[in-house]
Length: 336
Image 1 (cartoon, rainbow, N blue to C red):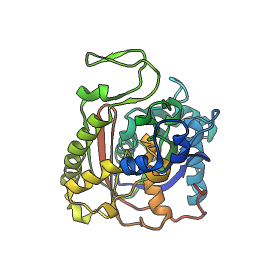
Image 2 (cartoon, rainbow, N blue to C red):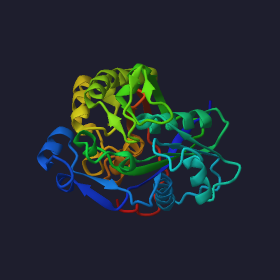
Image 3 (tube, helix red, strand yellow):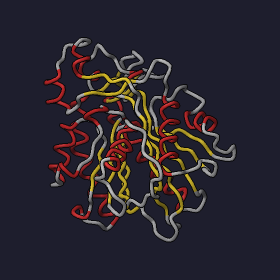
């Protein structure tokens, strides 16, 4: 196997802010209640004419500006999203065209909800480490505001829009992807869904509203049980002790979910990075956003070990331990 590493990162969020105080005017809730139960203070909302592909392109442009990167030699585009502009064509194909990525590049969307970015990152590593590809663009992006029911206070307070992008490239003889773990439990598929062609799963009738539906209590119980076990499996596969992990980046679903996960792992909460406070739950974008926030704030540095863990609808989960080895930045990041 060849070595592989993440060489560059970029991110983008829409300019419109939806604060907790704004939500007070829309649904029966208040700022104190939302912060206490989720840790979220505001989220970003895409314009009516702004779609997931737009967020993806902007995140990649931020990456290119900051790291002096070209996408003219990208040979695969992977977009993790649950909110494609269309059922088909894929967001990846739209991004390929908009950014002038070569016609010889592959382009596919990956659907694993909030675990999607880590699944795509794992796939990119496999493609590069096998020698089949040399430079893979990985994007996690969602515009969940477009499928959120703003009359439902249990979900409307959670979700926001955003995108994060990384490049995975050949890394010589050193592989900076240290260990992974994947899992799924389709018996819980009815706990988070948006209906499509079918209106029943696991014998359960679904609410065919076209909006996102979530059983928060069941997802909470599953995640708090499953993620710590998955993290331990990542560490075992990597031959690394948890004390050697510099930063833990779980999916930014809800701070009250991250807290018990860290407690069960006996991992310091102050070493867990999340993007939810000012961006909400951005699904596939939440992990790259949190990683980039850590980089922008000077917390996350090259040589550190970062453990990423996504979890969500499916029910799917995915973890990846990486040793960060970014190229030097040559430009300032676009303000978020």
